[in-house]
Image 1 (cartoon, rainbow, N blue to C red):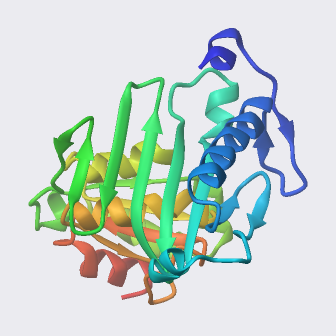
Image 2: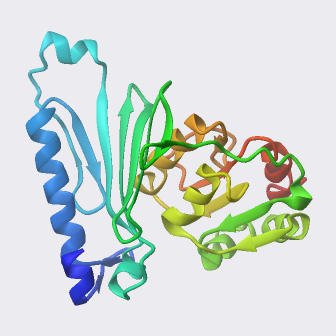
Length: 244
């Protein structure tokens, strides 16, 4: 927040995405905290890649299964660097291939969302519930970058989905998901992203009573795409998006 309030320059990485000194420092702080508390766990982060935990695992650590922390130090770096208050730090825990905990911390908004498997989803301590709208024609559709939806071949399905919903808003980044967590929107579509963009979103929406699907027919956070919904409109939304 100190960087953001003062203004900060972004540079472009090889994958044509922006990065700032704040991204790198934030990830370093999180990595150091995880390594100190859970030295046996692996870590996957946007800025430093994947590192493995200590090779000599204790019996207690082995009993917990294979664990990996997934970090996006600043989700919405483009917004962050331009003074737009829609950005967040994302953190998730994957255990034996399943996302079991997640946190979305949005400091400019003063909001923290979190969930743990079987324990519910929360925003600032208040329990979250996805909406009970079951009529797609009365639902709100949120989406990320339109250029990625076009480039990844979903434009036809996306326009069908637009034509079948009541409202459409391109908030993108964490906010598009958060509105579905909170019951303020019914659908969030995101494509062309990475596991660190999606991992906490999966467990939070599931614990809020909604659903998560990748667009390859599964539940992975590693395919680069997802549809998150309140659950009630999920099947029809997927059908329209994927060609039905």
